[in-house]
Length: 174
Picture: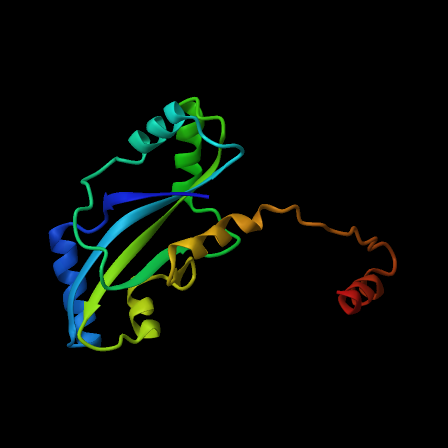
């Protein structure tokens, strides 16, 4: 997995609003910043030219120039899902002749500065939608985003005249 960051994720007005919301939870929070981080799964190593092209594609907004100090809250799509952003970014990379790109996913790395220990659960609830996202504490843990592509197996159940019995049998088996 390749990791590319350095794209600002918080406009100043959004940063101010988020900081206000976080300070309601913990008055010791002094600052917050955020960058988009891109996680790239490839089928083989990128050439220098391909990596340069990919970096250009993933530099689509204002450069992140703030500190990466503070506690990391990495918001990424839930395991087993592929975000709409990922689908579009992966399509664009393939249209740009980057055939070695298998999938690109994007997360938001929030760096929160506080004078005290942070309540990760409460802050995570502010930063992420629990239905579609999860919060990690390390960039390397995002590698699990790509682990759900393995083939799912299934069994066919003949429902015919004994459908209810067949379903009960399969239910016990599973």
